Image (cartoon, rainbow, N blue to C red):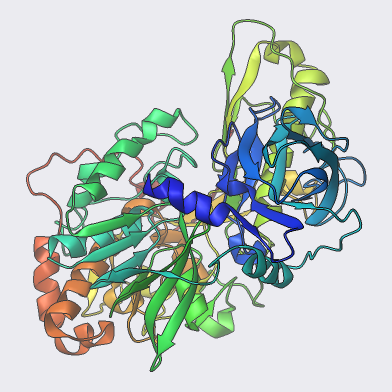
Length: 625
């Protein structure tokens, strides 16, 4: 009931002239088959609804709307022709707006090359209450951000993100007024495995914790939305009890891009919800911070469905967002891309620093339906041939895009490129390839729309761990959880580059053996924001070192370390750096005990890394799929 009231409050607001209505469509009560996509809020300022049907139109999204009056109304929808970066023509993401079951005149989403308002048509209202619907026409990722209803056919509507923010502030009651969600001992942003473990570890030490996550399920890349299996070893390094937590929630079937149930979302949810000291806030995206005396005083987050703005206060925060969203907003020092040899002295560094990063994967799989299963011809700027087509039935880690693009500012293009190549390749296999008979009965069973990122921003701590530290096993007195993966770095696949230069979507990797190496605690807090921890792929490492620390069993243990360090801070009323300078032995005592349940069988013995045959050399890999 409470959420319904919040939705009604935030969904619709009328201006003083009562001649306009603004609706954020992610607040629709019935979303049908449309998905709420929040991945690009840092650029757009808002989530949107996505008609993600892999070529099969999704069910209508709908909402009852109260109009200011009867008579003629004009409808505009904010949308985007998502294939426009690659194709100059009508795009596939088409939809219509319907009022009381009647389609309006115009088809939307198939034209334009940026997010824009498009005219949907007009209707005459005999009643002041109507049902508004979004009707997907193709299943190919049509998208809608907002609906605007007005008496004025020639109204000029804003497009830029800052202008859209001003429009929302004017149209939506209390849009910029945060509700106070209370005071906590520790606020964790990001509910991937690192954030989960940070929150639970602190809660088990008695701290009052808020865990904020912008998706409906926990686990991040390990969730059923992305489907990357856990990697790395536990029960290793100087503190073998670190990682016991993973036995409590870790899935037990290996493999990427498998069935949703393989990733056991329910276990992850229970792991967090069973802790009485944790307040869990799902579907909430971090949008801002409030600073006091150089520290974070308050974190602001917005509900991705209702639009409610929330305030969370605490003396300690942890950025487990992957993209370093909290640190970036707070002004923490950060890096992105590849450092040069001159900067780091690493043998694996490049001669000239650049923006290349490990990319994002849009994974997918298909299913034999036992009967003919057609797929539409999908040709939108990605031209395949017998030589370039990937003759596979699924795509996992090697399907990787955006290595040469900004994984935050260009995140929508990176994800959309991933969708484009999946559909284009599948269409060629099904409709034109020499082996199309082998694919007659196969259909796309699942295509991710949440991209699995590997690298974006990395926050800088008092130590920036590098390749030489790891390969030379440099001893630090604050070593904590151990990395066990190879130095696993990804690059555009040269075979793919030959056909799609600059627009590659396949990756190869190099792997270099490492000994078990404990990551210094000083990599887990910001060097210039005194009360900010970090855990996950945004910790203080170089690009090369990230290649070994980024896998999820390792990042989960990072979170455990941070949660236990937050407990030391809480007990001693100190800051993260003080734990190293004054309370390191107390932290080590916590690390020896760990935060996980004792006596559980190690069910995490797959995909552990440390390939012995790589000792003393680096090997290049590629893989089918």
